[in-house]
Amino acid sequence: MVRVAQYIMQTDSDANRLAWAHWAIKNSSVAAVPFFWSVALDPAVNEKGQKITGPEIDAVVSAVLPGVIADFVKNPPMGAIPT
Image 1 (cartoon, helix red, strand yellow):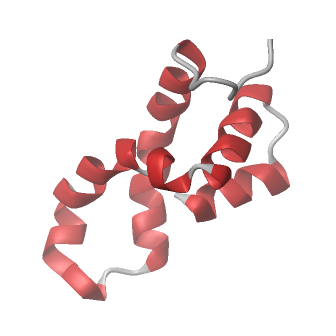
Image 2: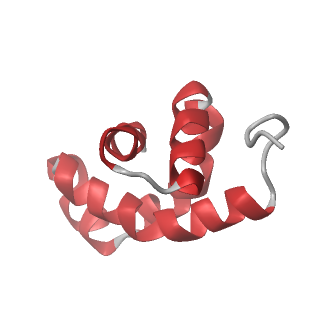
């Protein structure tokens, strides 16, 4: 999740994605929670276990990311998005 957030900060210009990325890096232990079940239940993760690669996990995180950002924008954590 942090790797994806860093990538967004380096390459993206969408304000919502950037706001999420900045918040997520500072609050990684909380920001990671929405990704737990998607990663834990992914068939490739379960099949490969510890042999899963970083890019494969990044793909799972990236697939979930649009929904996570939409929820972040709709229900921002206190102080995450300036008004």
